[in-house]
Every structure is written in C-alpha cells, then in structure tokens.
Image (cartoon, rainbow, N blue to C red; front, side, top):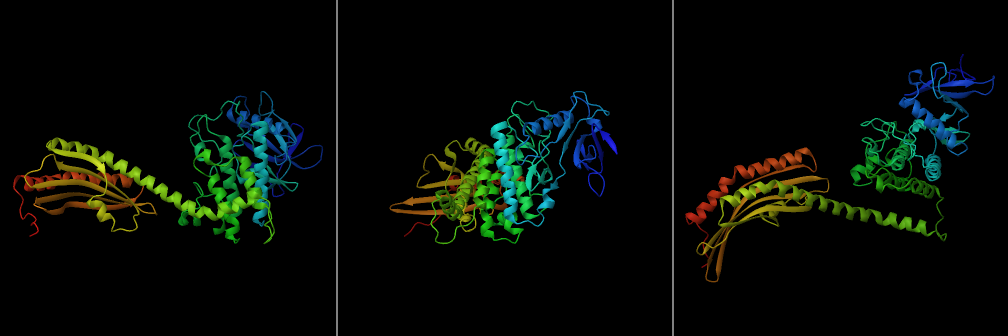
Length: 476
C-alpha cells in the first residue's frame, strides 16, 4: 500500500480500483490499522500552487472546514493542503466511505427521494444565508447517503461573493446535463444560487424517474404534447395527480430566466408541503396555505390557457412588426412611383385576412398592408390597391403566411355604387414559428410581392388611364 501523509491508501472497494475524477482520485485509506475511510488525492499533475485545480481543491477544503458539523454536508475527517504542493507532498482530504445516492434509492418510493432532496435544499438555503456559499456542481454523482442521511459532497466549484473567479473566460461553470443555461456562458453577475436550484430540480427529476440523464431545457407542464415528455408520472407508476404539483415545481425551478425560479428556501418549503400527509376527507383544516395551494391547483389550467393565448397574441404582434420592417422598402418604392397617391404601411383586415379566416386552426391573426389610394377622384370612379401580408398563428406554433396584390375599383352614380375587387397575385406558406425557415419564407414572399408589382401597376394603369375594360355595371 502507498502512504500519503499519515494514511495508507489502496483500493476504494472490495472490487478494487479507485474513483477517478477530473482533478482528483479517491482511494480507500487506513490509519494505524483503524477504520477504512476514503481519501481524495489531487492529481500529481495539478499539485502546484496557483494552478486552477489546486486552487479549487483548496477552496473545497476551506468550505468543508467552514461547514464542519452542518447536517447534510459531507463530513471532512482530515486534510492536508500544503502551500507549495509537490508529488512527494500532495494535497488531499479524508472523508467517510459513503453510498452513492443513485444506488441507495434504486428501489425507493417517491416520498423518500423527495425527502432527501428537501433536506439538501434546506441545507443549501441555510448555507447561503449563514455562509453565502453557492455549490454550483449539484448532480446525483455528488450526493451520497451517510449514516442514513443524504449528504452533498464535491464542493470544488464552491463560490462566495468575495472569491475571485478561477474559470477562464468562455468556459462553462457547472455539471454537464444539470447545468443552468446562464452558466453555459457565465458572466460575473451570474447567480450561482439560482443555478443551484436549477441543478437540484433536474437531480430530483432524474432520481424520481430513474433515467440516466435529465432532459434538456425547462420542464414544461403545458401544452400537453410537452407535459407528457417532462411529467414525472410518464416514467413511474405513481398517481399522476399526486405527482402533478412536483411537475409544476420542476417547471418553475428550471425556468430559463433565473429570476423566475423559486429560491432554495422556497424550493425546500414546496417539497416539504408535498410531503405533508394528506388530510382525511371531512377533517377541518386551519392551514390557509394548504387551502390556497389547492385553489391555485384547481384554477391553474384555466390560467395557463389564458397565459398561453396572451403569449400567442404577443408573439403574433411580434410577427406583424417583423413583416412591417420587411415591407418598409417596398412601401417607399411604391410611394416614389406614385406621388399622386396616398401610400401608407399599416395594419388591419384586408383581403388576405379574409382568406386566412378559412383556416380555423390559425386563431391569432395579424394583417400588414401597403394601401395605395388616389389623392383625388378620377371622375366618378376610383381605383385603389393594396399590397398585403396576412399572418395566422396556431396553438401548436405553426405560422400561416399569405401575401398578395389586390385591387378595388369603385364606380359611383346617383344614389348607387358598384364595387369590384380582384386578387392579382397571391401565395402562401406554412412554417414553424420562430425558425430560420420562417424568416426565409417571409423574405421569399416579400420578394414575390416585389417581382409581381408590375401586375398591380398594370391594373392601376388600366383602370386609371384606359377607363378599364368591362367596368362593373351599376344597378338599374
């Protein structure tokens, strides 16, 4: 056996071998022939003062010393972090041999798993309040069971507001698959506390579902096609209604916007509420919070439907603004060509919108058009035109885009009027909202309007200059 400090190190388990990580290796260790423990040894290639792995190792030991005696934090039994480490005098620390959590909960009920995560969340909330530490490396591999309690280890990415940054610019900070999106391109202001909530939520999902890795992105509870993918009940044979509050909590905790996630304290409180025993039917309850939670649960689907509609209205308005920007150069071109006409870009229902209404699945309509109207009547007849793009957005995020040139010819007489409208050219496409293909389709349709502008100009010329052919007849 090899000696490191006062410890003799060898195989970590009966099967032999050691646990190897990115910057360190864990061995089984004994001292004076006493209890078998684990020793984490910094790789010899990193045993030099000032290197990033050494500084992280030193911070980890300092954090574990600061948290010594804190429940649900991995205990540190001994450590040696020399100021000038070397191959003959390496940095190490000693900890108990613990059971990996994924092995410990392989056959556990959801309540036991939620209780374990609840305990870790409570600890992290307390550590933030008392020590201002953010862990930033939460994942199942760093969670263990020690003497019947869940503990969190591997504090190598620990962050305190006063600590200078160690990670080089452009590198991500956090556990692969569990990392919060804001930590992929971290800024000085990136919130490690909110990132911990995100990573702990994804850890909870993995342990509850038994999957090897978490799914990417936020864990949506609506629409239904997404909720089936992320819902815990889709993976385990447990009452879906019982698990639904956890789905809602996971959705909020994995929000792309860190400011919209619950705090770690709120996360722990929500898990504790879920673990509270269900009251028997008819038993009076004085817990207003619990009643409010049920009211919210009952009304949430309707609110989510309203929110979804509002989001799509907002999105359709953004699409309209995009189209207006793309039509602006064509408006200016037509205005320059027809200075005796009022030419304006605006919104409203035109011929394209009327065509779109035939497609009932596109519930959210927007219309953008260039109106072309004479500034003065030409005798008793007027010829106007419009260049339009109509947009329709469906509930499943498909966009129907229709572009067209339209003309309107009106003849007036005593107490009578005849109107004739014509579609001179139109084209439409259906694409998924927000994709590069959507923008490319918009550009193609605008180019179609430009290339078919001669059709509109010839129609105006025929009506204004030639008197028109086969004008609409006036009522007798």
